[in-house]
Amino acid sequence: MREKISACVITYNEERKIRRCLQSLGWCDEIVVLDSFSTDHTVEICREFTDKVFQHVWLGYVGQRNLVREMSSHQWILFIDSDEEVSPGLRDEILAEFNRGTGKLVGFEFPRQVYYVGRWIRHGEWYPDVKLRLFKKEFGRTEGQEPHDKVVVNGPVKRLTQPLWHYTYDDIRDHLDTVNRFSGITAMQKHVQGASFWWTDLLFRPLIRFLKAYVVRGGFLDGAHGFVIAMICSFGVFAKYAKQWELKVRQHEGFEEYPDGSGSPSGRAPTDPARKD
Image (cartoon, rainbow, N blue to C red; front, side, top):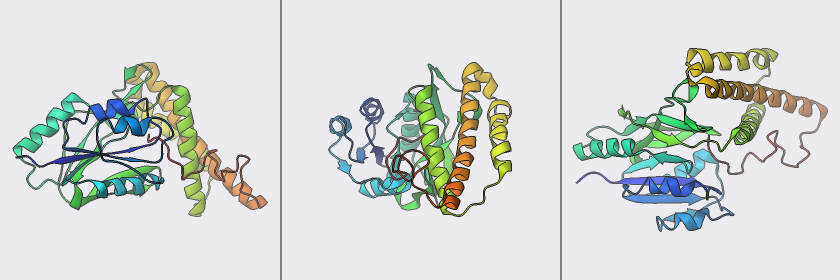
């Protein structure tokens, strides 16, 4: 008998996407959902697929993932976001590995493929975007700095070939909203940590990011899609450093509160739940 897998999902107001995610997890031995008090129908939809639906105040991506990990029953954990889907190919590849036996392995990583403005992205910084999401509970945990969490394991890991599908953004407006939100969170972290601001970062890092995504990583092979993605990603770098500069100016002038009262350059309190990129 193969080892059992607990699929763990964190959610917040994802009623339009969560059903697709959970339907792709029907082969798992358990589905555990940790919701951050959604105000739409997310929780009701989740309860159609599992009775293990819990709610907890938002702890950030790292805290929330480590909490849902502890709520699971089985030895193996599969982390998946509410805007992701396990492809049939990846499902079959995972099951084949577990039917053969995992041996001394403590984790599996696999590529993540993004669906963006009507097509799958196959180059640039967004692909293969390898993620370690399947791991033995006792050998791994989530670490990293918000909003970029990652699973860290102590032991051997195998890379699979089939993709996890990611429906990251509804449209370009959604993409820009997320860039605005995440650049604010990162700028605030740099500010709190006392990181130095350099004009060279603001001037050159966005250009370097564009060249890396569009030229070095072959984003141009995705045509107009690749160009738009590289441009928006480079703008995100510019926004991060511009917001760090803004925070230093506000601190020097003796005030840090923002017009919306959030205290955050993202226009949203950095502790609020937000969909992952």
